[in-house]
Length: 283
Ligand code: CAA
Ligand code: NAD
Image (cartoon, rainbow, N blue to C red):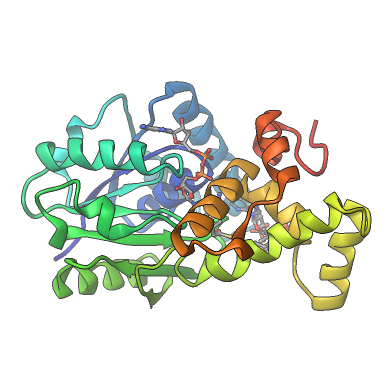
C-alpha cells in the first residue's frame, strides 16, 4: 500500500519528529494533540530546525515551505478517516493508548494501518482494543527522530504479514532502517537501554559518583554520545519510569525495579529537559 496521508497523534518530541520526517517525505500529515499549545510550539520548533537546514544548505526554501505546508494541525481525530496510516505517540500508558486505538478503529476506513510508537508496551494488547488487530503494529522511532536512523518494528500476535511489509517499506521511504523485534516488554531497544539508565540512577542514588562523573565515565570510557543521565533527561524521566515499570511488571523480575530516585524526581515534576529540570538543570 502506498502511504500518502497520515496522522500523528501526540505532538511531543517524538510525535513532532515523526510528523516532520513524514511531511519532508511528501506525506500530508495531520498532527493531533489533546493540548493545542503543544501542537503550536512543536510546529514552531520544526520551523526552527528546517530554517537551520536551509542555512546549512541541506534543503532549499521551497522544500522547507513544502514540508511545513504538509503539516496540518487538528484538534480531534476525525481527519483520521482520510488516512492510510496513523502513528500514535502519546504518553506511555496502556489505558491512554488503548482508548485512542478504540476511537481510531471507529473513525478509520478498513485500509488504515494503526501504528504505535510505544517504547515498551505490548502491541498485542493495544491491537486487541480494535476490531482490526491485523492492521495494528509497533513503529518505534528513536529520539531525535530526524537524526536517528532506526525504526524498531514490532508485530503483535495478529499483525498481518502485509501490514509488516507496508510498515517496513514506509520506514525505508522515510530514510530509516527497520529492524524487527518480537512483542516482548521493551522490545530490544529498551530492554537493553533502560536498565543501563536505571543502573546509572542507582549509582547516583547510592552516592557512587556525581551525576556529572557518571556521565563522563560512559561518554569517555564507552564512547556514548551522551551520558546515561543526560540521555534520561533527554528521553524524559516520566517516560523512563513508565518503561521501567513495564519491564518490572512484564518480566516479573526484580532486576528491572525502578530506582526510587527516578520515581521521586518524576513525582517532583522533574521530567528532564522538557520540564526544565531533571538530573541536570535546563532553566
Ligand atoms: N530534534 C531534532 N534534531 C535534533 C535534536 C532534536 N531534539 N537534538 C539535536 N538535533 C540535531 C541537531 O540539530 C544537529 O543537527 P545538525 O547536525 O543538522 O546541526 C544534530 O542533531 C547534532 O546535534 P548537536 O551538534 O547539537 O549535538 P550532538 O552532536 O551532541 O548530537 C544527538 C545530539 C544526536 C542527540 C547525540 O547526542 C546523540 O546521538 N545522543 C544519543 C541519542 C540516543 O541515544 N537516542 C535514543 C534515545 S532512546 C529512544 O529513542 C527509544 C526510547 O523508547 C526511549
Ligand atoms: P512527550 O511527553 O514529549 O509528548 C507526549 C504528547 O502526547 C504531549 O504533547 C501530550 O499533550 C500528548 N498526549 C498525551 N495524552 C494524549 C491523548 N490522550 N491524546 C492526544 N495527545 C495526548 O512524550 P514523547 O517523549 O514524545 O513520547 C511519546 C511516546 O513515544 C511514548 O509512548 C514514549 O514511550 C514513546 N517514545 C519516546 C521516546 C523518547 O525518547 N522520549 C523514544 C521513542 C518512543
